[in-house]
Length: 157
Image (cartoon, rainbow, N blue to C red; front, side, top):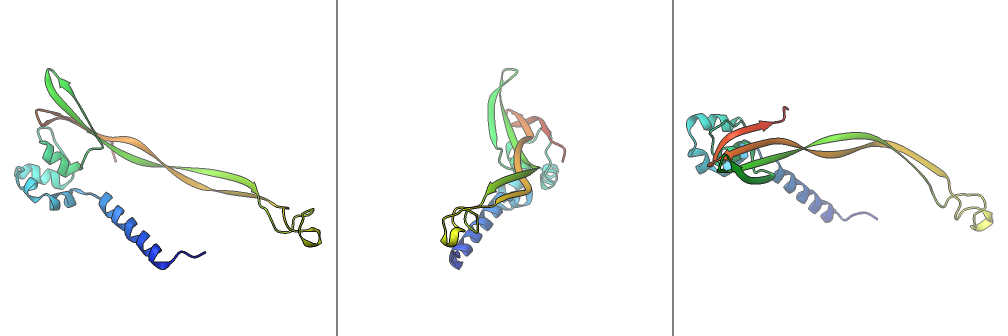
């Protein structure tokens, strides 16, 4: 059965929309938040535009450079309230897989079809191929005290 054209087009539009929403870059975040970017110092604007951060930056600068964190933890650091932004990435893990099964129908001997063949007989089938699984990892972490970056780390790319 063929899928109607309008359903295939609708699915393509939805997939494209999700892809665009997921592709956030420093440039797109800056374009969506021009006032936030304008409030940064000239040095921080240059650093943020390249997608980097430094100690002493505020939350807005980190958001523009790295995006929205995947999780936020709060706590204390030397008696002061602290916050940690965690960023996750995903790495593809490729593996080979093999499968085996039996097909039904066709010309299996001893089946119940007309003339003694066909029906429930089957042939063994075997297939191999690659599969990809995406595993999450900690791509980066930013520590804030009093709203300013006190430490950060990122996985080398």
